[in-house]
Image (cartoon, one colour):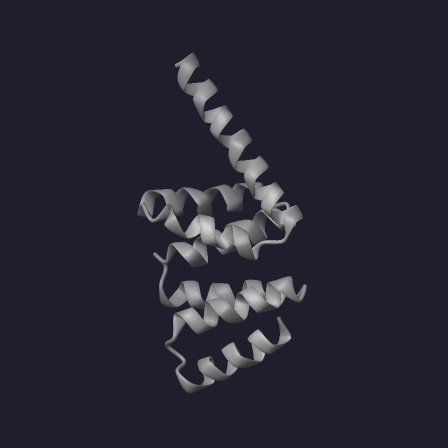
Length: 121
């Protein structure tokens, strides 16, 4: 992760508009345990491209990890509304096991709640 971070940082320096390198930087920071720095980097990337599902999905995980369920839900809803959920499966490979389980469990319980509410309506 430190080597990936250094390389991605260099790529961002060379081209500040390269969102893929910025995301790679954030992923490396996350892997190194620098969650706050990863969060800040993703927020910056989101301000440049508010409809980018890979950024939104990563931010959703970080919000859930911090215990901000409402914010995490809103970000996940936005990913679904955009319609580009293909980013979720590759991102799961990046997440640490405990965070992957957190996101899967959260999404599962959220889906069950939605289905239960629809049945009651």
